[in-house]
Image (cartoon, rainbow, N blue to C red; front, top):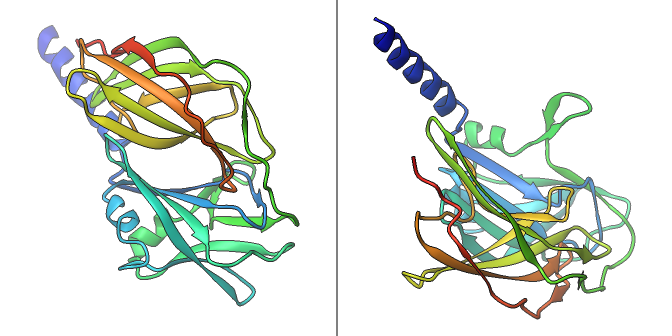
Length: 255
């Protein structure tokens, strides 16, 4: 009886964790509520919403709109992650007007998909449309790398419906605008290379990997990998010089 109870609890816990993994999701950068007149927009689609990101301006027109001023967003580049994520780097077709607040809009979404195109307001405790207020001025300064990136931690956390797996790197930077890190990961056994833009989350530690439900990168057990980085800010200013490759053992530890 005790064994049966343990098995039932295991199924219940697994079901709860599955419930936390949504089947759709759209989110956008910059994270901050203000942008420059020459800011880019980065849109990420999760799981079924990847089809939206891969069909922007074909099946799904995307643009910024403010007080009748509609600015088309052109797709500069798309990057497909290894685990249920696809991102698009988007560039406004014309300069944004300083002082205006623009809302991100995508046409031809169904009602459910439209509900995913929103942002959580932690102060008000509710979801809101994705908007940015435009500061005057153009950012033309390229980001600076202040240190030699180094591996500082490797993590595998097992959950009911999959592990979170990360290799953490310390990267110190300097820039006027929100920063993106172009990250290239290579599986040294298969030769497979994956490139994706990652962003910092308030620290100087960049986590390269995947969460329980999705991620730009993933790992296999008992493999060796190498990674390198270059910098681009949200206004498209690039430090085009790649860092040296960093080789490391897979952070994945199976059960």
